[in-house]
Length: 143
Image (cartoon, rainbow, N blue to C red):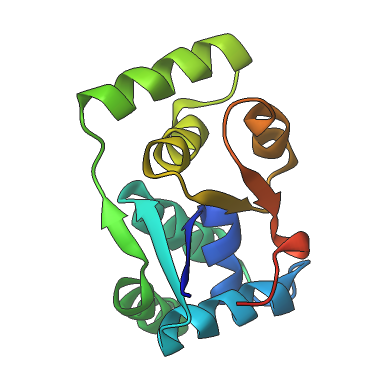
């Protein structure tokens, strides 16, 4: 059976920014996505967050950054736009937890889709407890 996950920018950004912790686990998940052994979903804002992480990375030259942004588009998970219900859920969660709306939307999608959120963000993991299923990138079972 193919597993389905919601992934956030803290995971997908590791596909493009070298030298980060849990980079190997992120690549394993990326390869499972490419090979069809896992289905990955994310809000469309993921593209902006990952491209911004490439832009901010001082070790990536402009020409390389342009190539990487093209790869972000090609390798992106299934991108979703929130409907009213998911948006309301995310804003309520953000207000209750003091987590940003950006981070809360990943959790709201995971809950709405009944998929596990995979993140390297400890704050998201903490908020996920009692709200939806989430796992740190380092603890994901190999797809």
